[in-house]
Amino acid sequence: MTGARASVEGTTTVASRRISTPASTIGPWLPDGSLGTELAEGLARVETALTEAVGSEHAFIREAAGHLMSAGGKRFRPMLALLAAQLGDPHAVGVTESAVVCELTHLATLYHDDVMDEAVVRRGAPSANSRWSNSIAILTGDLLFARASDLLADLGPEAVRIQARTFERLVTGQIRETVGAEPGADPVAHYLGVLADKTGSLVATSARFGASFAGVDQALVAALTAFGEEVGVAFQISDDLLDIVSQDGASGKSPGTDLREGIATLPVLFALADDDPADARLRQLVAAPVTDDDEHAEALALLRSSVSLQRATDVLAQYADRARARLGAVPPGEVRDALAALCDFVVTRTS
Image 1 (cartoon, rainbow, N blue to C red):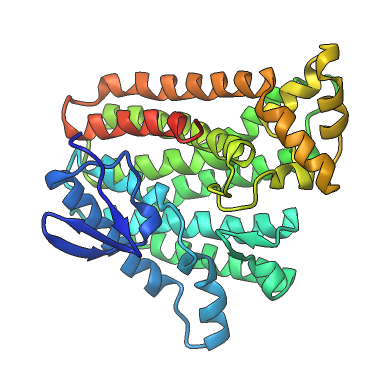
Image 2 (image 1 turned 120 degrees about the vertical axis):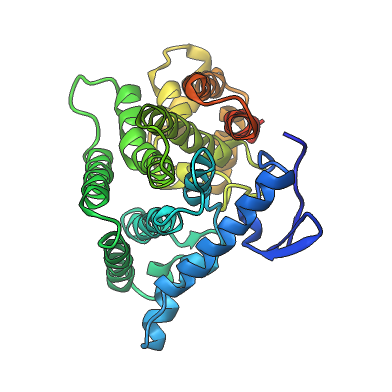
């Protein structure tokens, strides 16, 4: 690692060249130098392909399908695919296409998630369901899944099979989250299992696709896939923590949105399981959606100073450490350094 690269209004300066990419794709964990140049150029190719993939001859469909893509996003999944591909031939057929498939799949799930969560904002913009309707949001998500499948068809039956199994895990995780933990089950274990399915599985597939299509050795592909799942869960935990600790909506939504919607993320689950009398007020507040403004502010303040938040932060660090341990199979060099920096980033972004 040689430092962070700056981003301004969607333009990245790399090695005295200006490459158009979404500003939010540029994270402080990304390297400078030749590797940084390769990744920025790869992201530019992905962005071009994404724009083509959400296109349509029908103006309304084009607008709806491109709504969340144009709102930005971290492009975390395609970035990981491109980075994993650097361990082989990053320009091999299938690398860019599979990265686009993973991002399209992710975008499609966001349309569906916003309907289920009745969200009104996504990435700082009105969600598709609030801007148009639930039906339009659902159908647009379906359209993006179809576009991803169309791209996959050219990548071979094994890629289709991997994506199908990933999609099964995404849906399984959503169903498990919707239904909730079974009676007597550990809510924390249930939550972490849901994150592994809903988030970790697609991040794992992103790393797997990038490495596989780049011709990386299968043992290393397996290690990178496992890394992707661990760091994917860590990234989602950190997103959930940002919803609590962020003072300015850095998570892409207003602080405490999960509290208002009654979504029990890891710190809340720890708080609800705690029997310390000193935390009785916090348990009372977070036991249901916190819609009153004064109670919402109180709940956020109590959570930010709670032992429950620290316990959740410790779990985040454990997942980051587990991901980092997978990197022992990765040859020393810039790629392993960048992946290790990602493990650090998912922890430090919440502090």
